[in-house]
Image (cartoon, rainbow over the protein chains, first blue to last red):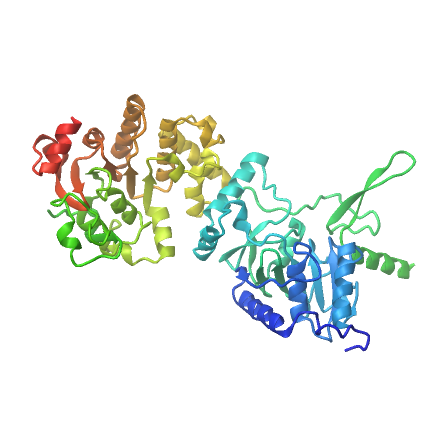
Length: 288
Length: 280
């Protein structure tokens, strides 16, 4: 542990009892892939709804040997990512990085990094709404009973109605998936592009919803199957002619932003994973 | 009475709500004219109910409000657990199963595949936020139908069968009339080709001409599909039109059972006599 860290706090801010409770709930979540496990979401120096679920998981499992990466919408430099990284860094003294490959623990909102994750890495996702049945059954008690009986007819009708209304499965994010053929799970606001990365992955994925007080997990090598129809299959956002304007990558998730210029401006698509894009640019420059 | 080709057999079914006391048995029942024990407040909704249903038969259950007929239906639908007794169900060529012994998950799976239900109030049987097609499709989706085109085709087929305009498949239930909603419920109930159809006061609240069309539809379905039906009603006219056999319930007990015509023409129990003379 480094000397610089703030000794006013326990290691990783949370007290040891809180950490132990979260670790127990994580074990339960890993044992029941996709199942929502309630936990006592603690008060933190950031407001609920700003990543407190993911933050509590990170604080509960982080060790002094870890290397931490925090991303928000794929970007290491957004305000929220910087603040969370600074908070975890100050209360633990662990090394931080923006490089996906050298991180051992990654906390993220909205994205899974483009670089393939390994078995020795853990990805912690911040979840705004934990229960996918919320859209079809607002009563939590009934939704819990539906989960316990694997009663997902209403969710399937929701998918059916999506096709009826939009002519396709128009669900931009929070795409519902079946985990291990047992529990229906919300994929958090990750885009459809990242959903296949959960399926039979090498990495442990932990999901924390601080406001909803729920923890769930997708352990390595777990079946994660999106809800789909035989004639309307699940599709990612991939466009055949898509390309990052900065690094030229094609098989990535892109974000579009407006660049003003003399003639009024234009829309530019670049990699959503900023660290990946920078790494590719650096590699290209090294080759020159 | 023994029937060779039975589908459903209810044996000594009991259901009560309340604490019970030693005097309950003496103070309740049709002879006392009440199902609620005056001493402890226990309501005896079903006491020693025995029914047998032949495959393809329509059985009517009549009785006034509070006679326990809806409780009985809810128990057969596996939505309510009986205190004691058995509900045997026999698929063709298979050994009989006691539905009371199923756990919640098994009961739900069984209910989805074998039983259809039509309620008096459409909002109980339909999800008013889903479209008509979505409501009917729910049954198919629960039966693991995963091909959108085939689901649409089957839904359209069911809508034609129940005399609903197929072009309104994507409309909201709120835009449909009461009689049409009953037909939507029937379409939904028939979607998974159930062995047993439960009808709970389906024509109450509809005006007479609409009632007649819904009954015509049910008679046609019964004729075409030979589907077994259990029809609960307090309207003797409805029961006479559909059911060959009828049981009469009062205060949680079956007071009379037999052929519908016989019961209507020659009622034996004083309560049935009262019911017949006041209704017709």
